[in-house]
Image (cartoon, rainbow, N blue to C red; front, side):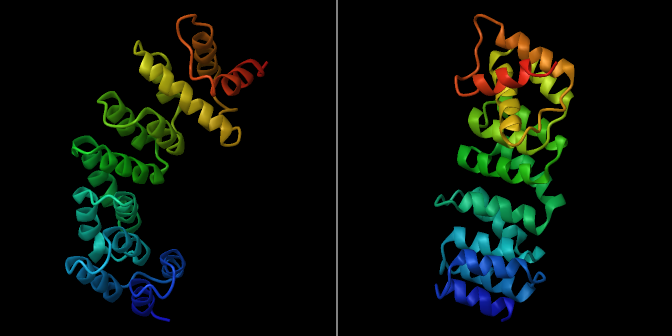
Amino acid sequence: MTQIELVQQALRKEASVEEIGALLRQLPPNKDAADLLIATYQSSLAEPWKVAFLLGCVRHEVGYETVKAILVGNYRGSSELSAAEAMYRIHDVRAIEDLQNILLTHPHILVRNAAANALSLARSPTVVLVLIEAFRQGKLWPHDVAQQIADSQPTDKQLLELLDSNDERQQSLGLHVIALLIQAGGQASWRTDAVRGQVIRLLHTPLFRPKWKQMPVLTNWAFSRG
């Protein structure tokens, strides 16, 4: 079955979008399938989230501006999440710059959060810098940005900058990120003694405590290494 036939099936609701998407991702990018989805979006014949999701699976660059428009248009209904990820799937290098700009400038937090989620797909410490800056500016929810930073493979230096900060919000964020790394499968086990020392310092600070759910994870990790 061709990419166009698969897209038509999804648009006619003859098969689940997720199943069609999985098949499309196994095939090369296809301009004709992308053009069909763009025309469908412009005619308002399908939900924006569905168009964005399928364009991200088709992955042809002609669909990039459409998924970007869906993201910044903030159509809700999960459209922003599908659109931001589609931008990255279609053109990762171009998307990183665009998503960073959207993250720092868009007025709606759901759009900013979707941009941050897509940026974390890059698994890059460079992205961590942008995520931390967005957090400092109040652009992201603390719980979400902690996961996004953890997914982006932060360096020890980046974690130490959070833990060493005079801002309790940034200290708390650093501890949350480390807790997530530990819970993800011991990814924090190789962190330097400097990081471990800062975690212990904060755990011993009477007026500062991370969220109770993080305490056992952080305590076990910090005090079980020699």
